[in-house]
Image 1 (tube, helix red, strand yellow):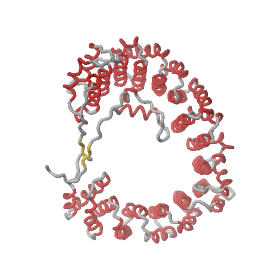
Image 2 (tube, rainbow, N blue to C red):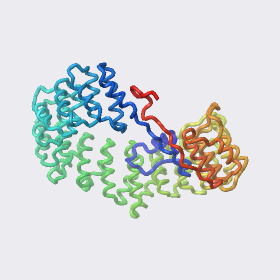
Image 3 (cartoon, rainbow, N blue to C red):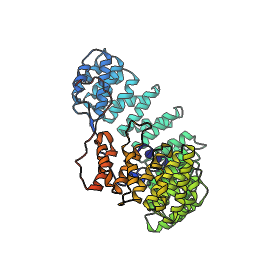
Image 4 (cartoon, rainbow, N blue to C red):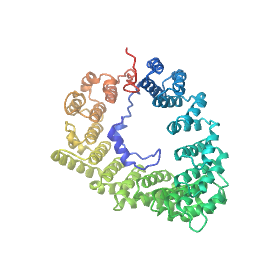
Length: 581
């Protein structure tokens, strides 16, 4: 089960994290039990294909254009059998009288269909009908490795009057084709100070991407005294970006300490890819740079050369002002902490950050120490339970639930009581407070803290102002408190929440319905089986709630259900020309 705001909370807490980050401040009620709704059957527009082919044969521009656009889009969605449209699309594209919008749409469809056999025709037309069409066609020809276009690109690179858009197309195409024969022409552009800066840099990047050695002399020229310009320095760094030879290390080391962060980041990236030891002498300087991208390269160096001292230095960056840096540091430290000799230093340093006054560090350290299951951190998280920062109270609430230290239960319960009173009076709550108390309610349930029972029950009756996550967490927690021991009055209240008609305004939230079904099953309340069965319906109508009801009935009675019916959805709400059934 996944809810929209859960996603928003997750994005908020993990902003700037590395790809495939491990720490997620997720709700236990979303995965305990793990329920998966059946994947929908996606209907593709197969029946529309004959209609689109007929539309392509029509003389009207709009019919041709819309049919071509539909074919391109449908193909990208995986619709089979659209290759048979290629001849008609090619006819539209190559006809002299075709309107430009229809020609563009036909070209786009042919490219989407990967019609490489039409490359000659596309190439000829791209040179005849203007820059706009070339912007569409030439990148495709480059991807297809269409060699005849190389002569055109060579002429553009060498010509002094080439239009900027056409020149950039040529540079990008040469890079995509990885055409080393064009290197001399690219270097002439790089060294021509009369060329626009963007053009020179694009040429340098293309050359550096194509050739991975031998540019030390070219970089030296660009960096020659008296004072090389920013463009020259950036072009030099770009030329050397894929170089891994010792010859270029002194140049890259110089560029890595450049006062312009963009230049330093490019050079540092190259040095890290070659040997992080090359950056180690200046790593502290790199980590103190004002630019986040530069600091990230310092992080990469210390991660690659991890020692207890390096790990401790990285931990201080949990308080970095940029979310990308502190997020990456948190995730890297989580992985490094799996190494026995690093774990103690990482935990101690993160604990120091958590004890500090900065909300950024508190948030990241709470997430890290919670993920590391460092239970001594729970005392500090209790102190932060009233932080004025939403980021801290959400991360801290998740951390307290994750650590599940019984001694924290009284303080957690007091916070939940206080929030109940505040929301009952104010009639509203913030998203952060809602998420925080949702985590805290889950913690009370997982630790089976019996004194919480009457407070948690107060969140069962319908009151949307008490918060979706708080109410869902409280109801889910009550299921754990009463696991295997039915409480008939409580189960009846939960069934009322579960089965309330959708026509009632305001509508009960799906999270509360889901949590109610789960808790009824967890406490094995047999009296509620029939009411749940009557409400059950099918998967299409109720989605994940129906899956939860099935799970609940099975928990109580042992009954098994057939495979759920998969919903059928259209790949698109409305297509051009649809078959009437």
